[in-house]
Length: 166
Length: 253
Image 1 (cartoon, helix red, strand yellow):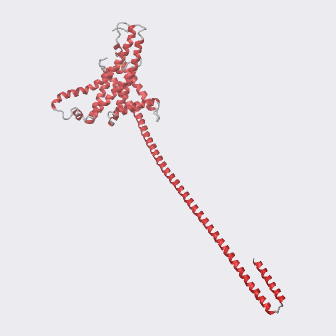
Image 2: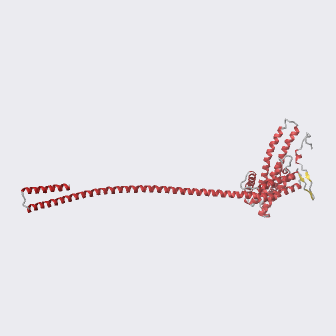
Image 3: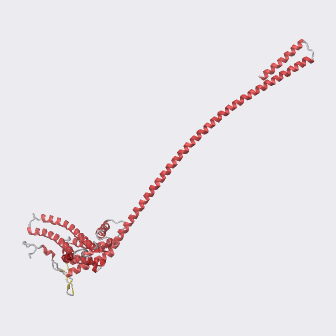
């Protein structure tokens, strides 16, 4: 057991050195290459997923701010529309009230004018009739009765005309 | 000495005697295939077969056996080589990994009933230790040159009068390293088997059915412990090799 055995030593070397050579070529090289390539790909995947996450977050923030902006804009537009509508409404109502007042005023003036005109016409007719009566009285010698009759006629005529104008 | 079952004494060392199975002589050298040589062959072929099988059927998404082997390889590479020696130790990875795997499989061979543990023979462990010794010196000489490497054994600033004391100590420690490597592995592997054999001898010695369960339980416990020792000793041998290589490659410290 303790005696030196050169044969065994040499066999050990042969076995071990052969095994080192064979394993280095056929086992370690491919296995280590696989481990390393996998480690690299895992690292890359982690990095790319991290980048994707950051991109997504940035995008989310951007969208959020856009949404907020849009919301504020819409709010502003609604506000503006409301105030414009309010103003318009007021304007229309004011204008309508003014116009109606104007119309009423015009109509009254018209009535007044017509009334004046009618009275003037009446006066003219009365004068004309008076002239006619006077001329008839002058041109013809009339009897009392005729005079009375004439005046009555003339008055009836006036009454009739006046009734017509009223 | 006494024959098995003779009752007087059973020699557990008998198990460790080396017998040639196939006689084979080259010149004056006895290269006979003995039991340790045979089991070393088996261990070598088994290790090579297992690893090349895994390497030949590598999958991008590992499972089962590939996962297990990759874990061992990665552990040896990261923890033993890169952590202990550093990046420049990558070239020594095949040596250190093979030391671990070879010693482990040789140790585990001993757990097969009727087998012979190659690493329980001092010649096998000495052969590995001598190989490691030359690799370590070679690594140092290659990096620092022959003169530079051996000059580094004397730290600068050491007073001259202390050299006669220091040089023999350095010299002894140089050879004590491989010696301790060889003896540690051999002694551990032999002792474990010896304990198992002693337990088994007890069954024969006491010749009693009532005592038998005790040694059987002892053997079972020792067997479990031996698996652990097989792993630990393989690890110790390879981690010490890595650390010796690291020392030889970092002489400036």
